[in-house]
Length: 501
Image 1 (cartoon, rainbow, N blue to C red):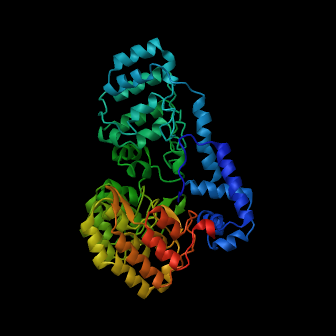
Image 2: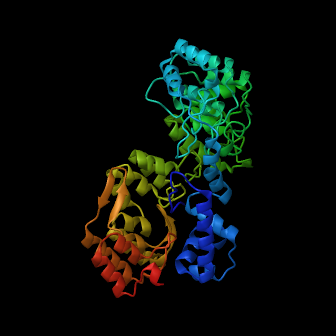
Image 3: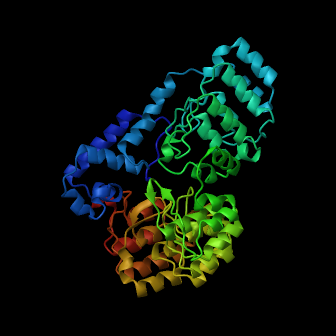
């Protein structure tokens, strides 16, 4: 999980210096560095900071740790982003690019044709060359026909004719964008919600395929290399593009139980189950067969994301793993909580869905998803009806839930786990914050209530000198929160700032 934010123009030399500095701090035995390593390096995950400092740590280990701190899986991925500056530096903005895009968006094919005749090099021009570098960095005019990313303007009815014009004038159907998540026009079309809603996914897919765009009907790798090896149909159905999925099936892509659920094809969905109620065929994800429970759980998630309630109700009567992720972010309970779907939340909790599931990029439970979207009625129900874990209870100022966890799981007072944007932090770390970020902005807690919470944790044995994965202690946080009362409580129990340890 990221604990650092990259600058707009990441510099590889500067990133290397950060890795060298972390390597040096490890050699010096710096406690804060040890905590960062434990939080981010998978080989050190089961150690504490002191043990990590006593374990050999190479420069490559330091580079991996830095990459993980920025939210990347590997140093190579981080380097790829830093190298984007060199990739885009090869291109200069074309003075007529924006005018050509405006004609394309307006469906003014005559104006676009005139521009291409006068400036034939426009078909190879690239734009969006400034950071931050994302999946549309370095887009050509042809990439725009997918309407992905979405625009305020509707897809013009002659968009296929526009795409054909660009291809006739020399646009490369295989050209990929230049950011860290690269993709060609086919990949953008297949995952385009707006192209699907305009019912142009199919004709665009046919045209691009005829003009040489690769399309492996088995997996998404040929058009979306960063998605990995998975069923091609999952890509459009995770991005609200069912018309694209239907076209791919027409071309020969094979649907599975997840695809049937996402499309709401009850005939297909029911057919995947035998008379005994068991799945006839297990789907694959990442090349590996899913278990039956996992397959049912993933299919239910696909059904919910695509608003196929009949399919969801059918699957919820089965024995599924309701904690499955794999459709963008979050499990089914997270999604229902975010939407404020209290009836579904109650149903999932009754079926054993994990209320403390943090298997998402935000390392947050369904309670946080609900509060972030302002679904306070649902938060109140969870608070009154569910066993909220101590980190979430602290963050949401649920004093009675914190007391209950200290009674039934006393060791949790010093438990370190990845929560929200901080890895390996303790409940005391979070109690020292006097605010909480929500989708509506910053919510400030009553400072006296936070002091009461800090005192409760300290009285139950909270260690104030545990360093979190961001290199900070609870006392550091108290000072950052400008909460002198909390700082005084922590100092009175021997708490120190990370720089003093």
